[in-house]
Amino acid sequence: MSTLVAHTAALLLLVPSFAARSYSSSEKVAPKCMVSGRVVTASDGTPLNSSRVVLTVEHQRAESQVYAAVSGSDGRFTIKDVPAGRYRFAASHTGYVEQEYQSSGGDTGAILALQPAQEVSDIVFRLTLASVIRGRVKDEGGEPMSYIQVVALRKPRTEELEDEGEFPSQSRELVPAGMAQTDDRGEYRVFGLKPGEYYIKAVDEFEPMGNPIIGNEWALRQAIGSQYAPVYYPGVMQVGQAEVVAVSPGEEEQVDFVMRHITTVQISGHVIGADGKPATDTYIYLEEASGEDFGVLSGIAADAKGEFRLKGVTPGSYVLHAQQNSSQEDAIYHASQKLEVGSDNVNSVVLVLGQGATFQGRVEVSGSSTTRLDRIFINLSSHNDVSANAWARVKKDGTFVLRDVPDGDFAFLVNGLEEGWYVKSVRLGGDDVLTKGLEVERGESGRTIQLLISNDSAQLDGLVTRDDKPLIGARVRITPDPEIPFNRSRSRSGNTDQGGRFSFVGIAPGHYRVIARALASDGQKPAASDPETVTLSGHDHKTIPLKVPTQSQ
Image (tube, rainbow, N blue to C red; front, side, top):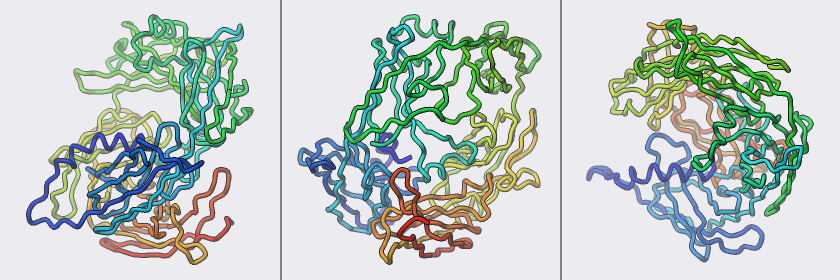
């Protein structure tokens, strides 16, 4: 994700750590760089005061630093004391679309590569006015409806589909671009949208959003449930029948909805605990099985007898989940069941909780190192169920415990490694988890995961050209060859810099496929280079050229 929201959040978290950083007298510090420029409007070049600009390290690792500034009344900004390196660079201003360096719009831009002591002073960000979609939601009697969730959905770009999740099956046909909730007048306003085409969806789902002045609304919604079906503009229930809403820069488009009653049903049943008794302190929630776009999780707590009733459920395919946290045992109990909901109530559903599997683990280091193992996080990502996962933090001695892992097939993901480090192998007994994944069956325990990390990683650089000229802001992706669901975490994506060059560090040795794409406007097929194959060994540093044709093929 490259939004300025993420950049700003990272800045707030990281400022104390790098502000207090000190260097030993024996450490040689390279001369710092300076970056300056202006932020203006794309329409007429008017300076934008109080714009936010931020530099973040291209391939962020643990304790990555962030550098930022705010523009003055003349639109000018200066960021000093920036170490040499490769950075993502973006600017934003309220009411405008965030823009990345060397981007003509809101799409991904180029990397800014800085050499020691370099001063860059000619940068100009030209921000485009954001679009707004607003409107009113009423019921069939013309009465305004409050607390309706309205979401603007868009089709994901090619690079987003590549980078989203570890499994292609998790990709959604539409992704949220903005969201709002109707007020007491039934009015909503989705702002900050990039000009383009959107599908608009209204959902009768109440979200308190941290507002304590809601009276009995929450309890009322819990008791009654929804009586209205989700609807796409201009009033249809299927996304295939929906119409797109196109908005231009600075435009406010009016989109009104009429929510219609639909026959809803009740799902009821009870939950049995792992000890065979009625489960208490259990949360029951219903998840839409399709997951083609923005969905709603409807949930309620089971009562003291382990019984539950979910009201106002519309027809469709769902997965019913139960989860119980046990503070005494430091454990989580799970149960899931697929349901097809029609026009009749679904009664007497029985969910039997069973504690998930527990895996002991140990991180081993290849070679001598002072790397901080307690900064490493382990995450299991489900192959079939996006809501099923497990995680653990590694201790200083390299041990970790994955508790309460639900049934399923999982990819093994590792985060928090320092720059230059990679996962060399993950083994469970004689199984290679990076090849076969982690297959979990109910109650499985007593097996130990061996995770080996190493810093003998490789580096791959290159130059992307088109018509014998450097291609700025091209998207470059490397994937394992062959690529399988369980090794996709070794795939990497990045953009070329102002000289058309790309760089990937910390790559696991192996065989890879490399391709470059020139970013295209929405709805157009991006031109791509012919795939190149490369074999990387430990400590390799290779450079390859990539040529992108003038037109997409």
